[in-house]
Amino acid sequence: MRYINELRGGESVVGHYLCKSKQTLKSRAGKSYYSLKLQDKTGMLDGKVWDLNNEIKSFEENDFIKVDGTILIYNNEPQINIRRIRKSVDGEYDPIDYIPSTEKNTEDMYKKLIGYINTIKNKHIKLLLEEIFINNNDVATNLKKHSAARTLHHGYLGGLLEHTLSVTEICDFMSGRYKKIDRDLLICCAMLHDIGKIYELSPFPINEYTDDGQLLGHIFIGAEMVHDAAYKIDDFPKTLESVIKHCILSHHGEYEFGSPELPKMAEAFILHCADNMDAKVKAIEEAIENASVQGNWIGYNKMMQRNIRKTDY
Image 1 (cartoon, rainbow, N blue to C red):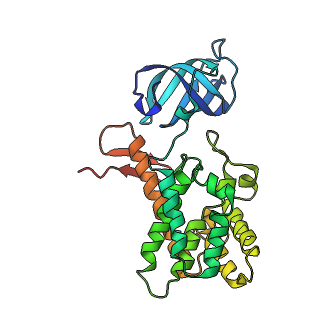
Image 2 (image 1 turned 45 degrees about the horizontal axis):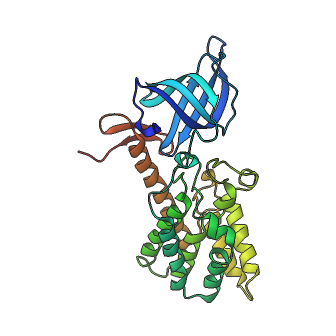
Image 3 (image 1 turned 90 degrees about the vertical axis):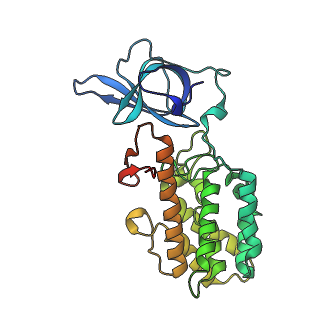
């Protein structure tokens, strides 16, 4: 199998890929064509089917398909011009080849994340984290398997756990840099800030928004999970529940980025900054790793809204 990150301009390719999206569009001349997104564990590839002839067999989004085409370079990115397509047959492909995964050990990361619970001194916060991360089997299982996003950053199996641990570590460091920061609160909210994503996104290889993801979003789902867990704990302080939910509701930082609230506490602002930094640095890292161009400038990045340069000098 030729992985997407190995493909180069001018090459002919015959291989099996997961069709992540399929659009029927019209050319300037009014002729119908397909615009596809193909995926394997190394990345995504734009595909175009300009001639919808008898060699293009029936297929749908999220089907595994066998394609025959040529790699072109368009706007500094590889693209495959496809001549033939058919649905793949069971046994022709291994699904694990189409699931991008973290390079880190998920069991080690989960153990390290859960280890933060034992550092919490506030008994109610500790009980809340135990209720969500230890007593809730959905969280214990799915946190290791989910991505942190569809495409923008940490969009691979184990990405949500990797991102959550990274944000928690950053917040742990920041908690000792300023006066009067409630470390227990900050660590708790870092661990919980994206917990709703286990219900917002479907499992791999699909990794698409669920109905609740579309209708509610992970921020609301996470705050609701905190409410449900706190309800099970005797005498859980109402104000503590509110400030934890505030940190979750405000962690995107601005209304235009999806936050129902702006950060109104030091802990909430630190969480927002840690989340934003980890997401954007990871997006730059992934853009550099996936770049197929020569030289230091790798091209325009949509998430960062700027041209990205490698550090090499």
